[in-house]
Image (cartoon, rainbow, N blue to C red):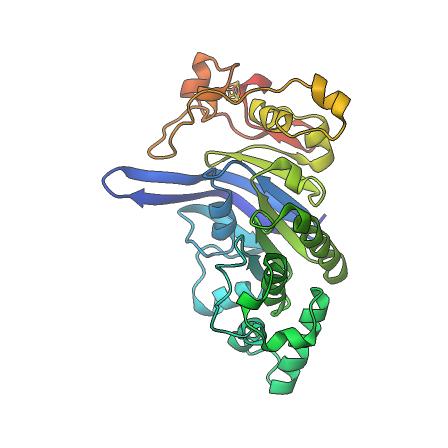
Length: 318
Ligand code: SF4
């Protein structure tokens, strides 16, 4: 497998006025292989969106490195940053807020092409806009219309077309279906899967719910307060979760079979969620974990391989 994105001990801290520092992403390491979808899941505030944005260079890295196709892309400047932006794009969570209401759909899609000097002739750009609209299930007539004329699902399709306009290889999908009606979510996921197959794309797919990434991800990483606490193939993670936090998250997903749903054991997520501001060593899940020992409060567990290609950060596996 070819590694496309290699994240090594990446940290992203934000200063908080008078309080200290918010450790949004705190020492995460992972690979994303070419052509795969890596799901990144956790509750809101766990650092998953910050992680995606930092990988793309939208936030400067506090410590650690990000490599893309073997090239160090940590905190790039100008020309080098453009090289990376042309290859790595983002689809945003909120299709309402992420499209400029004063621009036509055609201009929104064209903007990236113009910034990167792609398709220099006007007619070529127009033709490319039509092609992209077709690709995402819209049509030529939509190019002259404005974002407010479209439904949430259609706006997300426009957001996808905009990301594809510069022919990227890698896309960070930041909760692309969370703001959409449940009935529309599957359509957008199916579109992303189709585009991945047709264009050979690689995705980092961010979601707050494990059930959302189940069908799209090859592998899934679970984040908790700035750390990746478990990482495995999607099949393995759902069938054989190991970290106490992943087990609790999975037990909360309803099972479609009523008989099984009635008999399943739900592991409650109780206890105070700690604060990521100025947090010191120790397992950040300790305040909610029924297995926590004295050691968990003082020593940070590191992510290690507990079975082949299955990683977890928990002292229970020492
Ligand atoms: Fe629970 Fe300790 Fe494992 Fe953290 S390291 S998940 S507190 S057992």
